[in-house]
Image 1 (cartoon, one colour):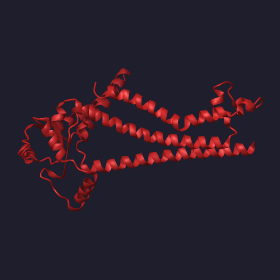
Image 2 (image 1 turned 45 degrees about the vertical axis):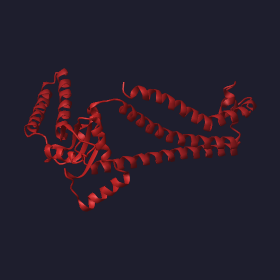
Image 3 (image 1 turned 90 degrees about the vertical axis):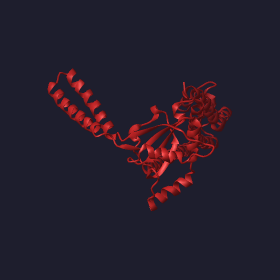
Image 4 (image 1 turned 90 degrees about the horizontal axis):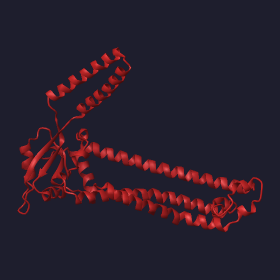
Length: 320
């Protein structure tokens, strides 16, 4: 079942925790202060009576303390605090879910446990050079034994043509159902042109992408190579700056080598393997900046709503 079965129950647990968090911060205070007030009991008739729901439930609503300015002000502050903490709680949930996925994956033996991903391999580097480079990390205690090297290819153009062909086929089928033969022929000509382009790509073979996958005889060898290239965030930043200043070359032809655990084949977006480390780094900075701006915008909207509620409450109090 993978990690989905475990994550379902973890989601239920954290959802209950989130509800309890809201109840503890603002819910209990709202219930207690509303039940102790008697504003609804004093509203016998007229417009004010329409604000109240008679009975036990009505005594627990905010309408029952609408003239208690201090309680409502505190309630609004607690509501704001609840929303802010819920946002942080969602990020904590996301962190815990990712950690659980990794834990479950570590308990499941798959071919990916025997494989590492190496990014930063030049297209003209041969398999023999890759094997020699990996074996250079062998020690007296660790004898690295490679089972197979899997090369990846730059298939962006192929994916683009295939996607366009699939779209045109759907358009052709739609036109055929409407018996619009002229449009069918035009679309068919476009499909044949794309098929010709695809055949040209296959004929000249695809260029090697900078990512390779190396499978070892033992899972411990893959773990050893992964641990060998683990770097802190500070070190990665220093290396990125040195790449810009000095333009170094690694033994595998490109600026910097990145070794990670290989994902499952079904989790790989093969058309994205041509992205460089620089592109990945800048993309991550951009997405995190957008996330930060979205959170800041959310806080701003929440604060404006809170300020509007306070202003309305003050105007209502003054008019009464």
